[in-house]
Length: 196
Ligand code: GDP
Image 1 (cartoon, rainbow, N blue to C red):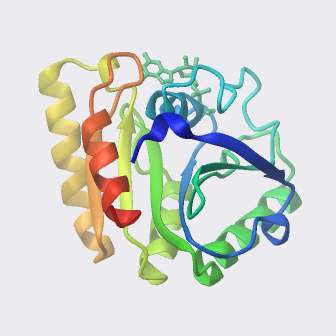
Image 2 (image 1 turned 30 degrees about the vertical axis):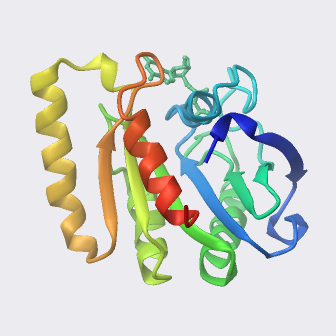
């Protein structure tokens, strides 16, 4: 797929407002500030497709992008931002779990985690729900440029080892929007999920 052809489709305040559950979609999720917007911009070669936010957690909208008639990218709101009220967090977790369980067109989940702080509780919850819904998961260890090659490799192996416990279809790659490390691997996994 030519990911450069991605265009903004809609911003949905909740799962119910998403486009019709048809075709194939892949969702991106991660803690606020994990580098999700940067990764989406890197994937689509567009500098401002997903706005890289300076105020983490403020946008609770689900942004959707069209790749072609049949295929969508879904940018889920960042989670784990301390200032969001607990009731809002709980409501969001519930609808996120529901989305992962019920969305027929959803064919894979990309979970972004800062390579220096991988597998936080909410990341693990998310992976757990995805595996429970038989969804394949791609973990991107973002900002990999922040570590040297040795530390990067070590973390990658540790996270791969730790994800075995989830007993699911989980792939882990290091990624950097700064130097494009892991971009071919990301495209390869997405192409597979999109059935190319
Ligand atoms: P989001 O909240 O998950 O969408 O995260 P953003 O994409 O807005 O990134 C959060 C911060 O991390 C910003 O200051 C980015 O410039 C920085 N960042 C994102 N990706 C990378 C990366 O690959 N390398 C480095 N060094 N910084 C990054």
